[in-house]
Image 1 (cartoon, helix red, strand yellow):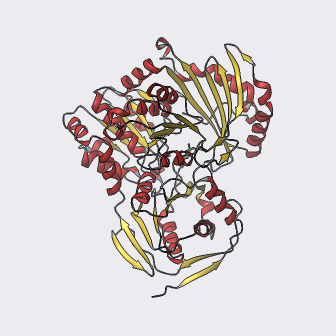
Image 2 (tube, helix red, strand yellow):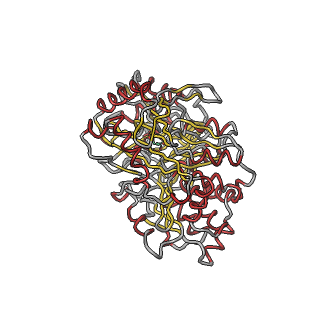
Image 3 (tube, rainbow, N blue to C red):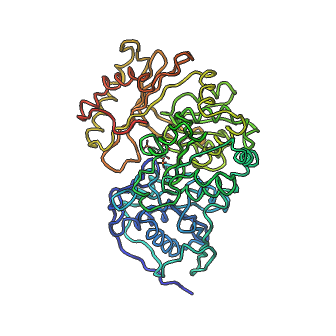
Amino acid sequence: MELPVEICPTRPFSDQRPGTSGLRKKVKVFQQPNYLENFIQSLFDLLPEKEGKTLVLGGDGRYGNPEALQTIVKMAVANRFGKLIVGQHGWLSTPAASHLIRKRRAAGGILLTASHNPGGPEGDFGVKFNVENGGPAPPKLTEAVYRRSLEIDRYRIARIGDIDLDRRGSLQVGGTEIEIVDPVDDYAALMTTLFDFDLMRDRFRKGELSILFDAMHAITGPYAHRILVDMLGAPEESLLHPEPLPDFGGLHPDPNLTYARELVERMAQDDAPLLGAASDGDGDRNMILGRRFFVTPSDSLAVIAANASKIPGYRRGLSGVARSMPTSRALDGVAAAIGVPCYETPTGWKFFVNLLEAGRVTICGEESFGTGSDHVREKDGLWAVLFWLNLLAATGKGVSEMVRDHWRRFGRHYYSRHDYEALDSSLANRLFEDLRAMLPQLEGKRFDAFEIERADEFGYTDPIDGSRVERQGIRIFLRPEGRIVFRISGTGTEGATIRIYFERFEPDPSRHDLPVQEALAPLIEIAEAVSELRRRSHREGPTVVT
Ligand code: G16
């Protein structure tokens, strides 16, 4: 039966350029008539062979998702996709979607999420698009979609009733099969191929392993319940905020020390579990805590890489590792010790994908609470949590003991990121222009105990496809070993967010216990002396410190 397909006239929006990860805007922006439709049709127009192809659809359960999913289903039907695989209730974590795309050989996937940004009517909404390898769309594609969005004049939509997304099973709508799948099944099965579930189950049963996992009322709740409680036997109380809610229960689903406050407080108690962990809106980020101990994401990445041989899925060894440029160089020391290459990429998981596809990298990660491996093409929050759980079970050590052992062996990279959010965009741009102009004069400048060794702006040539990106952050290298990086965030939805990343290497174990901000204080002052960010923005300090 031919379906009633309507070709709707529309007018372009000028602001649909995807950022670090997809198109992210305030809910109110997405609520403008045709805003979502324009972006989705621009994307569909760029996919050459849709007919008969499979598309994966899901999201993090945030406000606006059910309605947006219905719209996308109807547009995908009208654009003649052969099959849609949709997570039940519209749910799919980003790593689970990446896995489904790969496993079911889909042409790609659309994920409705603004990641760690808040939800609800006053919050944020977003669309991520992943390509057939399961990874985030590369810059070439997102730029082409943006260009298309500037000239779009019509979109296609099937005039059909809403699909029941709560009922699993298949139905045929015109030429398109719609399959509603359990969002957790395939992902949970994948995890059992990587980690020692028998060992962890045994340790939980004996009371030798314990966890408090904060799903922040976002997508990882159902995944954590299945894996940690049903499969590993952790008690129900191991989960905090497990049910996905459209406004994340008013929480900010960003797993860091500021927004996961309840978890942090519980982990500060004497009877806290061995491992504390949290994930974000769409389940790709992770935060790792021990009792009264916070593991910076950069250290977590380095510990994971250094101990990979203790985990069944990685016993074969690592082909290489990668980190985003602002991530601390703790990983580089590990790579040198185990004799594998360490790649430095711009911020954005999409820059890891070619390396993973080419088999050059097994494990990679970022300072922004993202860690992952070649099991999917996204960062993966629960994977990192299971990695740590498996490590604790295999070594019998606690989190802080693991990290301190690591520092003793490799030295400690004190690390912190200061975010100045919602700045006036023109002020932020001018500040970067000034920093850029200053670069040639910075070398050799002295600030008490430190001297600027060199300063530059990071650009990257992809070693696999030769593509080049410029202006990926301003770097100031210091002597003795330290580094300051300035970047403008590509995920903010209000004005501009400037991030300053501080890193200082300390080889001496007797100096590994300083408070982080104290250890970095001289660098924080150098950053202000060079940029005058606080003075120019009339701010007393950063909005968020991680
Ligand atoms: C995205 C990207 C990450 C990036 C992060 C922050 O994560 O996938 O690679 O590190 O944004 O980017 P920025 O510093 O530009 O704000 P997510 O979890 O938000 O999709």
